[in-house]
Length: 276
Ligand code: G1P
Image (cartoon, rainbow, N blue to C red; front, side):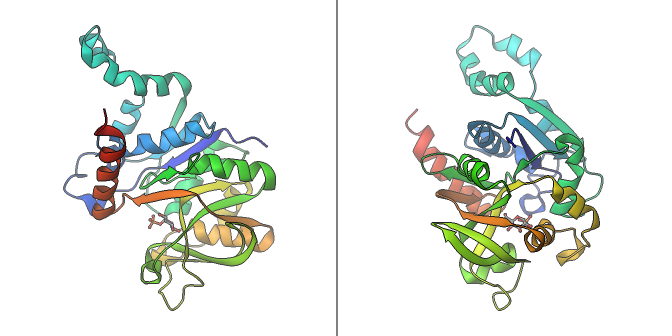
């Protein structure tokens, strides 16, 4: 099974960035000169996933407008030096199919992914949480994971070692190592305390799922924070079959927090923009 589709859950309110996110989606906040979500879309395209499915919600129309032609603006700047600034996004539009659906209630990441089923259908797919901005080493993180999927044909989550004091922010796994940086997961807990955490290996926002995850999500009961947790559905998948965890090569910025967002901004300014 070849993966072509990548799902972006993007219905969350972005309350940590209020008031900035009062009237605009947090996914549209710029890291230097590009909205956060564009970094994730570029990573998906690099991995060969050119069908981008977005789960949006109320107040998120700017995302759909961004990934579309801006006829009036483009006409205005035609022939000027400004035109080339739009070249990268135009190139994305030429190569990509976008589809959107709306999540009516915020019932957790598992519920957001299930809402995306209508855009994905019965095929394996990737999920990107745009808040986790990733810079791969050699190739992008999704590319690394797609290559693993081609070999193992099962659900795969990206892993990162985190300080044990931060386990309450993540899904945390335990399992046995089967190759360098690759684990067969036996146990997953969503947002454990450091005492409950089975390790310091946290799931970060890159996933590949086989489509049976949708049937599991349909009966997954609300878990931590009374929300339907993707981690709980993955636990069931791991118990019945196989789920792999991959310690990716590269770096992740937690753009869901103000500190991480600022670190990412400085990193991208130094590495890409200051040399322009
Ligand atoms: C979500 C997932 C969690 C994962 C995290 C990665 O949590 O539920 O398992 O570790 O993303 O960023 P959230 O950040 O939405 O609270």
